[in-house]
Length: 353
Image 1 (tube, rainbow, N blue to C red):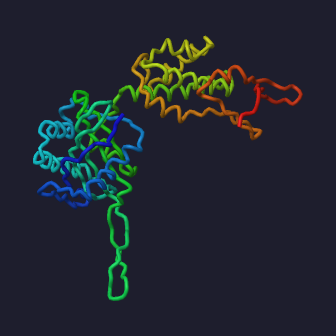
Image 2 (cartoon, one colour):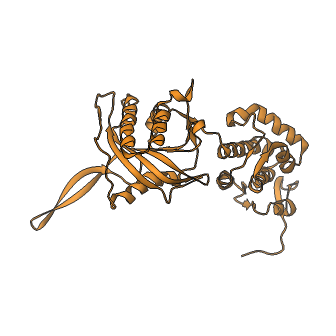
Image 3 (tube, one colour):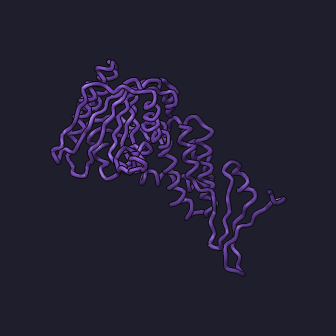
């Protein structure tokens, strides 16, 4: 989990990286940009806002042979080892050249590249430094007004929309041996491989957040594909409820304990294990039986799990994920022979406003 509230931009270098396929070249500035008190808070919001709003999925630098052959990893090490303004700026030129070399597809847009050195960044309750690399590509039309005598004249110009960052990456000085912990965003999907694979060369960082998220997603699919056909919609919802509650109340996941706690039917336990053999690789949990639990990932998953039963008679039954025992005690499902319809019987003492 990250917190950028107290983060400071210590250095800022700005270059222009154009399209290599069109031989447009790259423009490298000679000196770091001196931030004014007026621009600094605007840029902080421009750079950081997408990361506050994005679901945290971490990456790490990777290479098929060895991490030391990853160019961006080496440049990050170079900056973290000597974060002086001069060294950060000179290394930012190397980063801009590296990005230009990856800009060979005709669809890739020219834009400004910002390389920043950041301090006081909070990640996983640790205060670390970070490198921020951002790119603005899409220009927005806006109108300026000039006074001309007793009239106002409109002038059309183009500039950057500070409400939308096109591409960005935060490289945290954390978990260096694993390839650093990294967050990245890309608002433009037409060239996704260019930024993520070619420029950064990253892979998924498999931490507790990743494992928790993937295992709960696997449980959601198991509920839909196995529990629902074998039982009913109520049991599907309740299985998900018991699953997410197990994750919410425990610090560590242990698969045997999990299965014994959330599944009453022994046949479904066997089905779960078989389903994991067949589908575990898809969710990167095929060999996963124990791991630390991420509370943030549990909270995010709980928001996505549906706790309602939608009926074809335009009636919806909402189940309480906080008090799951209510559904077990006070809801019964049955079959009405006369109407030839299923029904849910709901017990209650009084209606609550």
